[in-house]
Length: 355
Image (cartoon, rainbow, N blue to C red):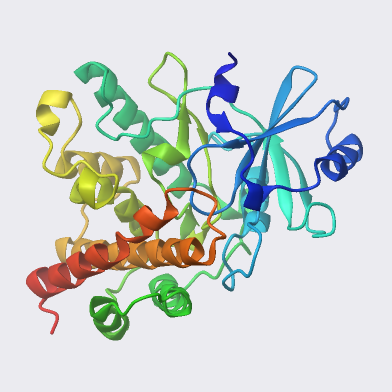
């Protein structure tokens, strides 16, 4: 079986759309499309449902907003399309984009189509089944790609207006506070405390770059045999912002356990060949030209990103409750929101003196 097809399942009933209308759209907007469209849905993914489009021996990928009532500014497929189009040839690997449709009359919600990039999706950050050398090489390349992204010239990419250039953390705290409040299913006292505490303790000195917003290892595709990133996916949360906030979110993988949320805390990283937190952070700092990173600032970034993750998970819980989630495991995933929020508030108290 085609490896791309192996990663898919039949389209879930709540994600179905008019496939004939999509095919008609593709005839005029996707070069080389010849018809005979087959649609399946990729496994995984909690936000924008993603589909494999197969026709004439070629594969494309469709990302669309989910059906149902959506939170303000969420599921921004338009932003995804804009940034991956701008990043073509930039040194940050992304799929080739084809078209963006903002007309909900075609298949029910806005969507875009891009090339399918073959390769490996690595769901477990501990990289089971690999040698220590392979694991080390993969993490080195992830680090390189993220450093490249954060060093791109905004003007050269045409992304100077992709977001505001100041007060990124202030705006992010406000945004995720709003998103959380719009998706509350049960009271989370830790989130209420963080919403009050975070805005008054933002560290100074933020810089600005393109930020991805969700730099987990499973949002990347790796070469089938080489330890190399061949595509960075899921740019829904991308904007202009502080690159250290982006990178610290990526490094939550080192802070959280598998049971807490897709992490590797408590793992013997040295035996696996995976760099420890300080080694990995120093490598990123070297690649981005930073002499050092203030430890207290870094602690704040970690607390903020735990808060942000809890807000994201709460949104998943809300969609699961409403029956509009794109992933059948959404309810289980959403239940992680409370423990992550409590971890964030505990860290704020223990490391930053929050009261």
